[in-house]
Length: 230
Image (spheres, rainbow, N blue to C red):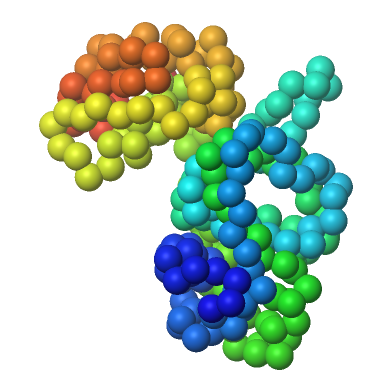
């Protein structure tokens, strides 16, 4: 396709939003898209900006955040490869409801809103396929809200670590993809609560060395997550 390399197109096809689309249909929708690399961390868009595009994360990470009354960032969502983001703003208000920071070393695909929406209007059956992807995203959000409401800080952290060790058995060593301050905001706890949670997880074999974390007993960690909240 004109705007994306074959490799980048294949990565985009893995995004949940596009999972129900055939390659020809996806090619039609992504024809005007462009891949952009970011050498430095910086602001991608601000709250209230026109939602004139949405994005696919190919490499790296972006953080959606709100600003508190004191000017601090409160991380609302973190997107890693391969995920789309900001499409809801494009479909609804036409304004970005949050701020977005792109992390150094990231690569994003920019998908302009106007031609994307025009092609959906011309080929309305494609909209139904995209709706199924948005429904999957909503299901994920509901799951995360349930986790925040029902789990203790230690259990939330344990769930995050288990996701990093997905597919491994017995023990594992993982690297935190976020700073501890961002991770605390990501799982909905205060930074000091994260330190206490890490300390409590030592009892189930979690050893923290900066951003390197050793999980010596994955089964014990899974049992902790399944317990009723503290």
